[in-house]
Image 1: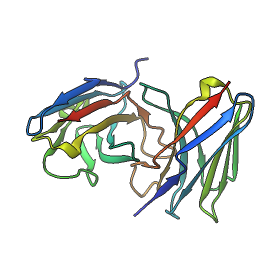
Image 2 (image 1 turned 180 degrees about the horizontal axis):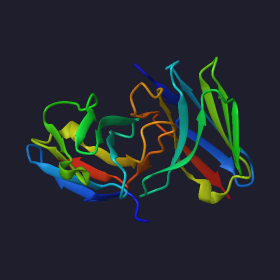
Image 3 (image 1 turned 90 degrees about the horizontal axis):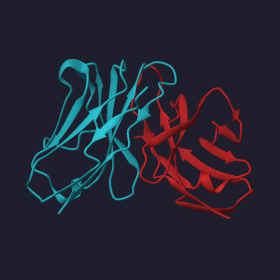
Image 4 (image 1 turned 90 degrees about the vertical axis):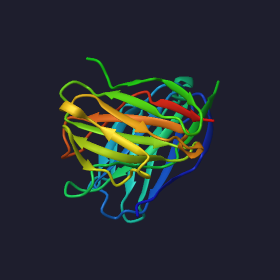
Length: 113
Length: 115
């Protein structure tokens, strides 16, 4: 079955860039997502990328996709203390497949002032 | 516009008891999903409704879990009888479409503790 792996923890200083990595196994994945969960809150969709793209940029967020290696990363530029949260990588199959998302275990980002 | 809401936010029950979780999706969203996160692990899919029909229930762990969405609006997830391993956070999500990026909007979750 599908599997999504993430490192558990990342600590950065305020103002630095953060890079959160994710690997997945399903070669039929068509969409890949990054969600953010702040304490006590639900999952907030940050961004997604279609599998035929290799990069997507949205303000401070840059998503890089290496489809050959099945590797996805999320770069946060100028990381702020408000970026401290758990970040989940998720993937989804094509339109003829399941609509369910397969998530990783989440990466806890700690931003030190 | 109101987001996805879930009730209760927390529930503490004893093993063997019954608990019912409720999810109200975003108005107009035909697609409703249940997920859960157990013991800080990955978030796992439980099932997917399209309106009142179960489109995919492949993630339901066993027959102690029963999900309903009568009328195609809100949904309930009942666990009966609850076991210790059912403890975790249950998330509900809804989406407008199933094609394309299928952006799923999540509720805050219900934290279930089974003692």
